[in-house]
Image (tube, rainbow, N blue to C red; front, side):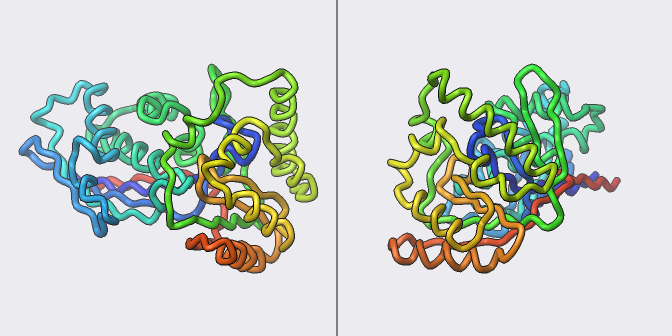
Length: 302
């Protein structure tokens, strides 16, 4: 049996929605999984990207998530044999949900090959053990803009067709663990109200295509100021995006990438961010993507 799993990138937080909001993007990873009868897990990568450890099933997130899902499904070790061919288009450690995409891919491979009847909640519960938060996972699974409230079902809304996401990704990467380490565990009441109100404004702006409200809605006090010391170019890139006509801009997930949402002229915004980065001697790449209003897709062949 063979399963082909395609999982999109996603960008979380969107400014104020720390661990709550995420948006799916069109670029995707693909995993072609072929069941084998030897109980072993083999990994093939088109490009290891300087990370040979990705070929190790004990390190590779697709393989680890597959093993965990098989364990939850009570699949005997002797029946877990699989060959995983991974084609990775999502940049790693760039704030675009690469770890969530890999984790979700592994879970979906297990569900497909072992004919599990899991629903979205079951899938997110299993994958969440690796991520610790559902935002990127939910966006990758469901598509669109997702709202993740602890203890409640994930909700989603479609992103507008005319919206573009411009993402500048520095060549120097930052792990999520490094970025999360500087975020405080407690916030003042004033800052909590500030961010909660802007989360509501942001969802409303997307639903009503009120692009003029995005700049104010994407402001944040919970994590971006704290991460500025790790990512000193962030503020300059955000201002460059706004000066070029972006509707909203923020750190992409945990960084180091910077996201700009545009209803018009995304190429102008992209060029401005690239120019600003060059002036700061920050090498990197600007991508212009569309949001994706459908999530992961799975094809199974006997």
